[in-house]
Amino acid sequence: MFVTSSDLHAERLDKIMPVRGFCIGAPSSEDIDRFVKFINEELAPRNVNTLILRVDYNYRYKSHPELADPAGLTKEDVKKLVKACKENKIRIIPQVNLLGHQSWASKQGNLLKVYPEFDETPLVKFPEKYEWPNPDGLYCKSYCPLHPDVHKIVFEIVDEICDVFKADAFHAGMDEVFYIGEKQCPRCSGKDKAELFAGEVGTIRDHLALNGRKLWIWGDRLIDGKTTGIGEWEGSYNNTYRAIDMIPKDVMICDWHYERPDQTPVYFAMKGLDVVTCPWRNPSNAVLQAQDIVKFRNYSTKEMKDHFAGMVQTVWSGAGQFLDEYYGKTPEPDAKSPVSCFKALYNEIDKLAGSE
Ligand SMILES: [Zn+2]
Image 1 (cartoon, rainbow, N blue to C red):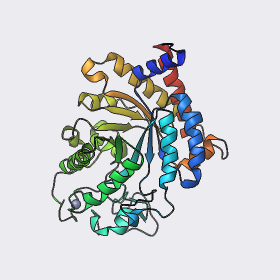
Image 2: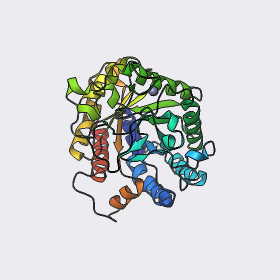
Image 3: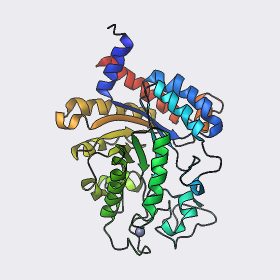
Image 4: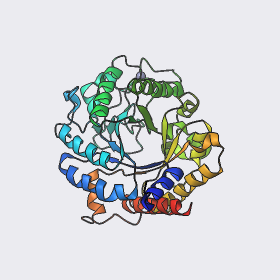
């Protein structure tokens, strides 16, 4: 068989950086076609092989139309994304935020809007003008992981979105869970927050496993924010970090660090967990983080090496705004933008594969 130099390059990329990811809010219906163009012309040539799309309720769910955004993606929209990714050998992983991130500023998310009984903190009311910090410590609402009816509903959502995306993995979010095991919850109060967090990870993982699917989550709740100095966003100040020893070992950790190239992938790998490093908008850090993954893989035991799975570029605007910046329709905010970070990261990964 004739082997091309691009085949060899792809092989080297798989060796040094098995997961080469990109994570963004799922595009709106009207942006589908230009997002498909972006997949074909920008992600594929850079050998991106994993696309995490934050969908949440931006899909017209048949199982729970009461939760769906009315202008959400249709099945036909999703088919276009699935087709483009299949043609380019890109694995799509849909995300719906579970546990935390059930509200944003003063806006209730769809789940708690329709099912307020799932609210972990029903006594916390949304202020007219949201500010951080605030007396309630309100960042985002959480659902109560011990409510007896919550999983039936969210798992029907999870199953439907995984089916329509033909996904073999699902991202449950689970970052920045500030409300957990709260006093005002009759089920959770007084319970160990690490056990509550790990319990929810295990419940979601087990449900996905029934259909042969893997669970991906953000890693911040598993890092001790105080001792490490990493802080209460990229790390946990509410004692959930001990959950790292309680969660199943086949959960993929998306370890996001935006200010420094923290060496936390080693921590996850030493716990037997697969980990990907996630930069956002700091190109020079992203380059160092990519170099670190290669270095960790080179210098580790065979037991640990493959836990350093790769890199995922994260974008926290919607797809529409990102595409406007990418294609120069609106100016990039400054040198530290997800656009320049994405380009720098994938240049570096390419270089690293070339120099191996
Ligand atoms: Zn509760």
